Length: 226
Image (cartoon, rainbow, N blue to C red):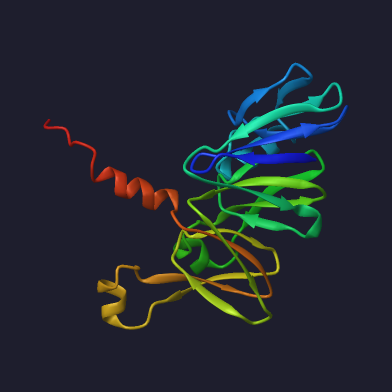
């Protein structure tokens, strides 16, 4: 897959496909395509597959894009301010936050990832359901704000503000820990819990979770007098 990422705050990815090459994307993500691309909207995986996508924060339908000739181009845009991150799924399974999937090669498998730890599900910032990308090929995900990549060694641990975890390799342990100290919990501004990631594996952190951004913007929205 030949691609280039354009823009900065509201980026898009432009992908060049060869004859017969196919990819799929979330609905509404396509920004432009040339006449050598065939578009086909379907309910991939049947009703059960559609329900899984809906639970993971995406639309029940997906859109397939197939090249009818060599060097066919299609472009997909970011939904909100942030970054588009290419993922080589052939290197291993990736777990992502809900609603992060943008598009992927047809050989990539899109599925649910269920948090089995109650604490992580309730207090980890992402809930019990996340997105799981496996198989072969390249996928593109959306990250809120800037993206910081880190490689954790075996047993290496990092504590992250809840909601700031964009994605991580399947081998990384995802959990939560309570912040120690009464003043730290109630006056430190970070809440009561922090998300804890333990290696080995790669993680992708995001600097401006969309829920934090919406909270900041809401302060400036005029309140109704009624």
